[in-house]
Length: 96
Image 1 (cartoon, helix red, strand yellow):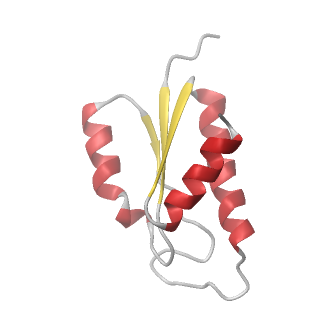
Image 2: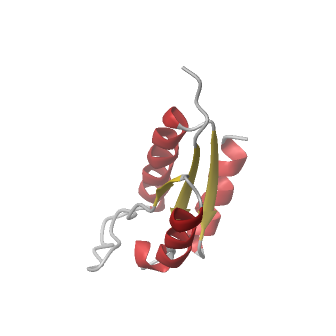
């Protein structure tokens, strides 16, 4: 099976939600045939529940999303806003 798809993982920032990266995700969806993922990191979203959540959980959640994209896409871009940018750089370095 030849994979030709491109994926893009858009990661929101601290105390944020996918709404932060929605304008970019929507722009890419309208102009490309890429597979776009905008996950909600643990403890985030419309109602914050950060008590007991560690940064490791954020990194692991983002990494799972990246791995899922890598299973179906030949190329995957990782983009992050604020803290999501830190996670994106970590993942890019780990999977380069």
